[in-house]
Amino acid sequence: MQVKICGITNNEDARAAVDAGADAIGLIFYQGSARCIDERRAAKIVAQLPPYTSINALFVNPTEAEVWKVLSTVDVSQIQFHGEESSSFCERFGRPYIKSIPVVDTIGMRSLVAEHTNARAYLFDTYVPGEHGGTGKTFDWTKMPQKNIGHRILAGGLDTENVAKAIKIARPDAVDVSSGVESQPRVKNHDKLERFIAAAKRAGRDLAL
Image 1: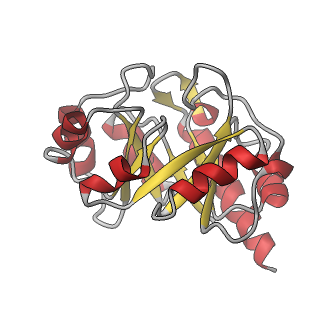
Image 2: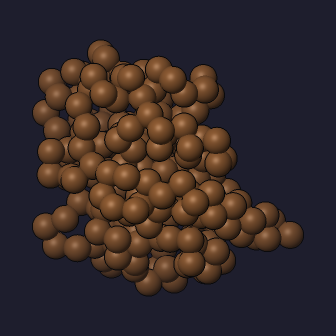
């Protein structure tokens, strides 16, 4: 079970996440997010991380220039798109990409997956009108697609108390958390980080038994 810690805003939290066993960190470049950072700060965070850490850059309906500005400064492993970006737009940047899929109805989810057939993975998140993730709210985990769509990432309202149950029900390939391991917006709680990652990894091992 892979774990991504999203909404990283400082060196200390990034290092704590990796030291606790996180496979990836997420850096947000969306002005509408309380966890948004600029490319200069992001570059400093990435520079002090181990070389095999996956660095994810998150955007919501960006312009092409905005994406290239980040890619020219930050050593990004893959891009995460959380808006209404088309597949042709997502494929322009020479990086693997993850497409966020709001969990609303089966037809809508299948349509988005079918449009983004070249996505490296699909991130299933809680649908809240007017929001683009980071709401801290869960969805009905039984609604997460489980077959024939590639790598599936579970997000939305996960925390140290519910992540094991969520994994057991949704059976994802990875989980993504931000507010569920925070002391306050922009500040991760390092104890929660360790407990969340340990619980997710343990639940992943249980699925394989």
